[in-house]
Length: 185
Image (cartoon, rainbow, N blue to C red; front, side, top):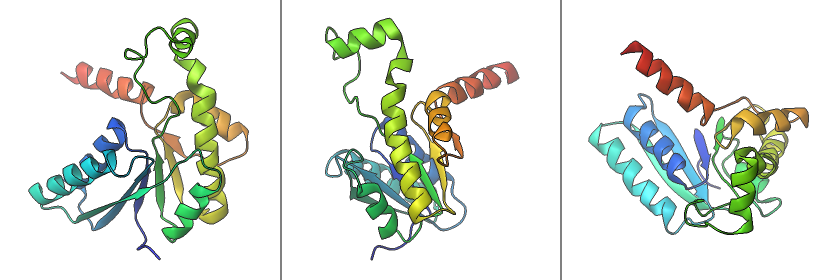
């Protein structure tokens, strides 16, 4: 069995990296962070290196590890949560659509998002978030789910399904903090 973690980050994109690195630079108590994503051999290796370096630079008691998981594979989320012996917190950052829109210009998906707005992606974000929320409710109901993937819309969908999602960060929350920071200046 894997050692329990304090925070499980699902996903290996830039936002997941930022979360892991920020935790590694600021945690004041011993903290175990697990990063799990579908490309564990590339992106998560970089996250491990960057986060461990920050923990060392700032003399923070943070341990970071990585695991491979495909959230689209049914049942894998519950297995991973059980493996971590009921982590107290789970932060989901994962998405179906991997290529940035600018690189995928001209395809049907890009046109749909361009015409319909980013809300067109909400159902995909909600599918993965609901999968994590359902597994968390079954395996570790005392844990908290912080959704970082279009939480402004996806969290409402997941909550309407009767599944637990505590809060979100990203999108509007980031803009709100950016505006607040500008107002303070």
